[in-house]
Length: 256
Length: 258
Ligand SMILES: Nc1ncnc2c1ncn2[C@@H]1O[C@H](COP(=O)(O)OP(=O)(O)OP(=O)(O)O)[C@@H](O)[C@H]1O
Ligand SMILES: [Mg+2]
Image (cartoon, rainbow over all chains, first blue to last red; front, top):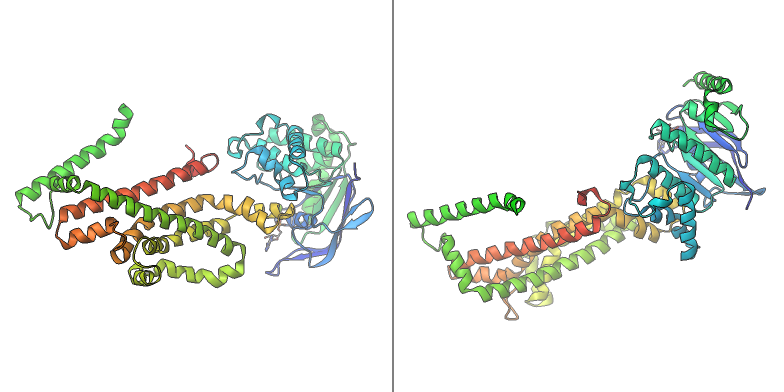
């Protein structure tokens, strides 16, 4: 298995054509194999930051670098999986055909290997029995799982998730949080996870980075009080409540 | 059985009432048959000229289908090209409007010059009249593709051709079907009008020719029969496209699900 990937933002500026500054002078390093949550008020520039990390946009100045086994590379075409806020499945494809899409587009797998990897990805997210269903036949939670499977199928080393579970009910969301974290740790994937839920950030993260309103400045950078393994009981513990309080204060101090 | 009656019962009764009133009024007021023949006369004319009308239906139907298929093929190819290369769209889209606005009767003589009188010229007339909705339908469908899905394809390194084949064409399919539906009706209209100008040839009179001849001979009952035939043709083509669209979209699009 290749090593996990780390990610660096070096004095990154991102402005839009209309002159709006979303990110200014950002310096940030994300460690290989870590689960990092980005927490910030709506419109501060979190999605913008993820798009830079995915190589979907370019910064106006500074640079964004992926480092794999000590070798720097550009984010464009990197071993990256992206999960959007909505599942973004192609409605005319079955689940398995949706999950197969990244492999199809890369065009470097045989039909047999493609099948095996799609099956494996569906199994990982608990959708093995639904492979031939159409997206409109699925619940919101199942669609999101399918979206995860699609992002996983090419064995990404970097996983970018933009408020992926924001539209789901509380219980589904908690379950998916647990599964996602276990999966990322198991596969040793570096994760950048955007949310504006303080609770979700406090539970999921190895590290939480708190942003100010736009242009996004880092106003807090905290390590989780918990060791690697998560279990649901931690949500009701004293350290968890304290951590939530800390994150909340950081958001407020940042001007949210 | 009961359910079928529930659906077709009321329109059948309405039709019978309409035809009955028509028949009675025409007779009571002694309207001259060349102005408005009674339904019974139209039925009689249909029976008397059954084979000519049937041949006309086949001839016009054949031409209309050719024109429609040309529209479907060339219209979609054009939309894919314009949708793929922005520069082509900016350069050529304004001129496709010409197809929408040009009165076909003014172009038909040109078509006769180029293709000679007959099926070929008429099919091209049908094509010109019906291609525009196919182009705009497919093109607007391609334009409406969710930007997030475009990003997804970009992220996975998809080339322009893959985006076209795996994203834009399937995503645009509902609008393509809508365009084809409109085109099917227009193709029949284009064929009849084309026949008025360019249909006198190869000894196979289409419905348009039958309409013209009946009109000149003041055989208004036959004229009615031919008009009826062309609307049956239009409906048939429309229904076929509808069926095909339903089949293509059934598995995923809300418009075809129920
Ligand atoms: N393509 C664009 N052109 C112009 N402005 C943009 C564009 N994309 C985003 N913005 C602006 O940049 C700012 C940051 O947007 P971004 O989507 O990164 O915020 P966010 O932190 O993800 O917010 P949310 O939590 O609501 O998703 C916002 O003010 C937004 O309006
Ligand atoms: Mg966002």
